[in-house]
Length: 73
Length: 148
Image (cartoon, rainbow over all chains, first blue to last red; front, side, top):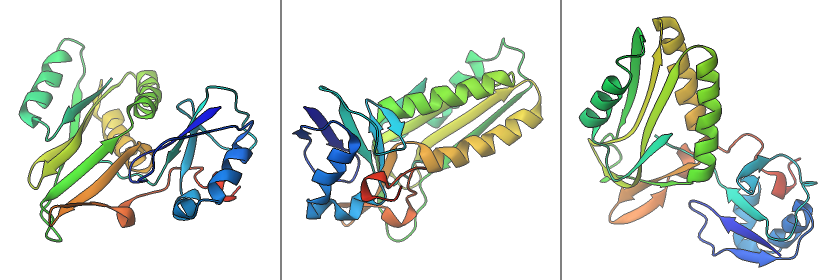
């Protein structure tokens, strides 16, 4: 199982699901109408490192974080 | 190390302490940038969420760049609510000579705005409203939506 956490303004509790790559995570989140506005503009981190491809492999216990658009300062 | 505080920053304490901490290291330049919440659009203040693990690794990567130029970075940021005319952000560069510090403070603050995992909300009419129109997608965002 991997855990998906939603940071900042995304008002959604963490999910746990079976996934062997980020592609599997994308397929699940695309079914969720609440997430439609976020998938196009969120960066993704696996275990707190930003990743650039859906081919990123996942293993049991991994944490996937969704980071919506930022504005510090 | 990024200093995170609940609520507004104590600006005089922080910039004075940083000055003292680096006083013996022979830096010729110390350039702080202080971000203060302005009164506009009838906001009562701003509020911030911070994701510390990725903020720390982002900052550490910048510190390595600074060290390569003989410089040092410091940064403080607020979490939670900061009212108008209070300050939520300080970034500072120390360097042997002014040119490195002047250039680095600009690059660092611009990358901070584009990349640091911090989310801003307007405090207005007792609501906390995500500042979506002033926010920037992090480089590489959108993979889950099929952008790449």
